Image 1 (cartoon, rainbow, N blue to C red):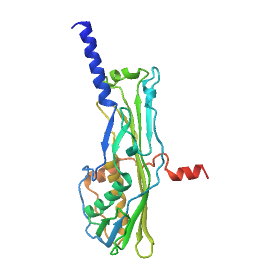
Image 2 (image 1 turned 30 degrees about the vertical axis):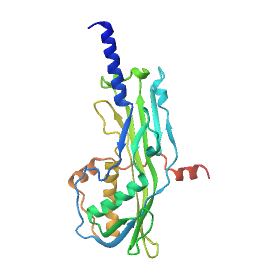
Image 3 (image 1 turned 60 degrees about the horizontal axis):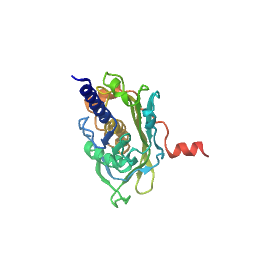
Image 4 (image 1 turned 135 degrees about the vertical axis):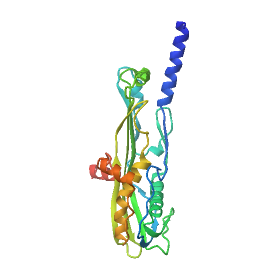
Length: 270
């Protein structure tokens, strides 16, 4: 093959490599489809209204990916407290979600799916049904994404190394939501808990998990905790499906994401 044609072919391949890894696209979905459905043998005699979570996340949405393009600098990175609010670009996370509403709806879906209570409804306008015996509410303290892209000091030529099995970077997903179930008549808290987790994985062209793992991470930790809500209402928890139970045995304990929004600001700036 002539040298000129080989050079052009190499350039085309390099562009394809760059294009295939420079963007990240994801969309929230629930349930994740990862775990089987199980149901309670004794639902609680309660009618629950679920309201959207209050947004108590931080406001940091920063990308430092331009450092990746600087020769001899080893990497670029991004930190997004609100990944759904980013402006999509070639180096910017694109994640389609409305976390405060989506997570609240997932609570409704899971309570119905597991048959934990007599009735459950979602109130997007925060209006509690007159027939509700309880309100399930909470605040979202973290729903974050962090990414690194490793250039090895080669700038835009680093995909050559990625294609040779070297890692292309890391991806982290994290969330934390404080939930509480209150009596609709007197506001007494009958159950409360925090659902949280954080991970950090090395990504490569041919290995590593999907970039966005929120759906199944949230489902795993939520189903782990909802048994306490069922017991608080006089019902029985739904048994964990075999796959989820085994995964929880092998999975590390849940980890709080770094930085928890408004609480962190208040503690650091009294």
